[in-house]
Amino acid sequence: MSSRSTNPKPELKGARVQKVLANAGFASRREIDRLILAGRIVIDGRTAVPGDRLLGEEKVLVDGKRVKFPSTETETLADVLIYNKPAGEITARRDPEGRATVFESLPKVSRGRWIAIGRLDIQTSGLLLFTTDGELAHRLMHPSFEIEREYAVRLRGRLSEAQLDKLRNGIALEDGMARFDKIELVGGGNTNCWYEVRLSEGRNREIRRMFEAIDITVSRLTRIRYGPVDLGRMARGGYRFLNNRERATLYRAVGIQSPAG
Image (tube, rainbow, N blue to C red; front, side, top):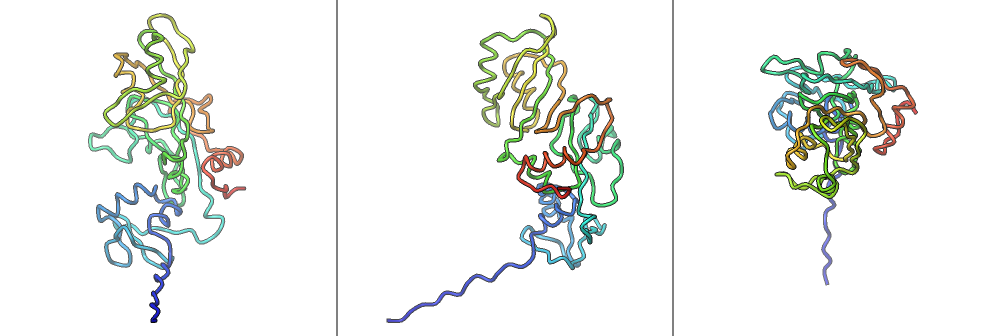
């Protein structure tokens, strides 16, 4: 009786290019995937493909510019800041129409670049988180971590109990069911009413589309919390860096040990 031997699969060396660039603070993994598919990343003179891995000695170019990787433990400490986005700015690095972008108001960083954690549409104001840690950004945006967002919403008119039930139990949108984890009236009269809503998703214009589905107009929308981070009192267009305690809490929310301890 003969025995068959199977050759073990060769051990893959290095880390995937998406992870390395994200950890270096260049961009989120999702954004790096898009850059690879667009042919904008070059490794040692050849165009990168999705399965590429890096050992750390390679010359990596993005749009022709070399990526600087951290060489010391101090350099690995990422920045995280809160920005109070005004209505009228877009969450993009550049805009073909010449509109103001949120990145124009941020301070420069010595390593990597700012990554927006989620987006707010042009009409929505409030809390935006930015970081130079691509892995932190990836986890905070990934649906599996169910990071809760909280918004203040001004509506034209007061919601009926039937409308509130629909918003709590689920509204059918073109990209699936959506519901609020919590919605409550917090102020206003019969014409303009303020509600606070909470949900754990970040789909495009999700809140506005939910109200549109029940024929309610949103006249103002402001994000006031993202996970454990509150907007607090901050001037529109202003920003501040998270302190070590706030950073550690944010990292713990997605299961990462904060580099700052």
